[in-house]
Amino acid sequence: MKKQLFVLISLMLSTLPLSVSAHGKHIGYDIIDVKNGGTITGQVTFTGNDPAPQVFPITKDMEVCGETREIDFVKVDKSGGLTDVVVYLENVKKGKPFSNTQKKVTVEQKACDYGPLLSVMVEGNKLEIVNTDNVAHKMHAYEMRDMGAKKTMFSISQPPEKNRVVTKEVDLKKGEGIMMQCDQHEFMKGFMFMAKNPYHTLVAEDGSFTIDNIPPGYYTVKAWHGTLKKHPQLPKFVGMNQTVTVNLEYSK
Image (cartoon, rainbow, N blue to C red):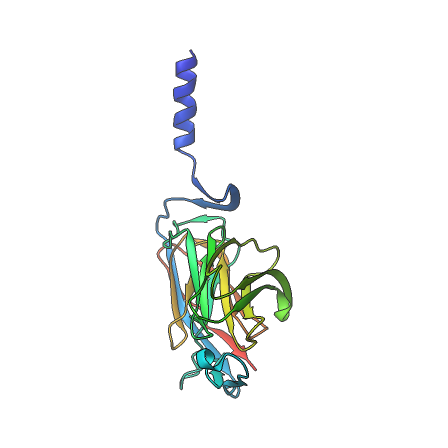
């Protein structure tokens, strides 16, 4: 009888959707076999005058950092397409598996710069912070909330002679992304989007994007940019085997 009960329970568990967990915490997403999934495609654009790159004078560690730093936080091409944006579906509870299976995302501090300017990390994975410069850095990570509000998450000192590699577990409370800034070099900035489901993508240089294998249903399509505050979003229904076009627009 016990053996039959064990077999029955095993069969029941094998038919359940696979829950995605990280560091022992359930993040509320189930992997299922998506049949007749749909696709969302479109472009993220910017209207208004394209903001000029910001120029920062450098007054310390110039042998490594240089004398000035120019950063184009809002990159717009001739057609108005905006890059350095993540497009994602909000609050998706089940669907396809994550394509990015790496358990660790690395941010390198090199020549007093964070590169790339924007990266994506799956919620629950670990963040590896590397200092390859022969100067001290102090990464200050902020949780980014609505309309650009920021809350300190952690601050890590990395002198050149020790702590060159530090690993952190990242847990966002309310926000969708992180701003990284060096307290030693204020011009050093980087951004990271925290993905809670696999329905997200970095846009191409012209702002175009595609998200596929979506279970039929209603979704909110959103964009996220590190420095632009009011993020566009649109509700959209995706039908079986349907391709839906969604264009999202930022404005100055």
